[in-house]
Image 1 (cartoon, rainbow, N blue to C red):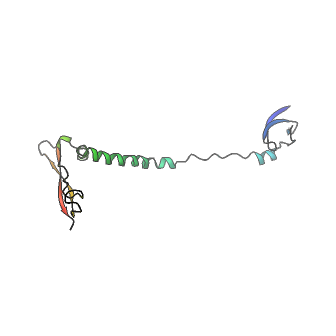
Image 2: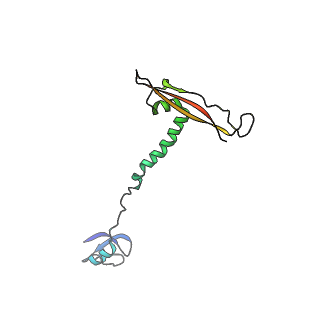
Length: 140
């Protein structure tokens, strides 16, 4: 009787014959002891859960720039969402540019504008109005 097995000496699948089976090419004898030395079970690495643990971090890294651009491009929508009101009830005054470096006269003006957000709740309707204005602050 001939069977095909993997030979430990030839490192190939060859025909084995006899009792105990011996490789027909190199003569290696397949015994339980020799198979135990050669046939070590391969350990597959356990699936790593590290990628799952940091999935929330990747989501957060995508959400932060998205929130920044939403605030920068659509500030009325941002304040309406933040204060749970309609965009028609958000009143934004444009930021003054009096303290900008490139505004005449050129140079540092030793001032900046700080945003002031005031909310007002209507007692009759329960709706919130948001007012965003700017206060000039001297840096002296």
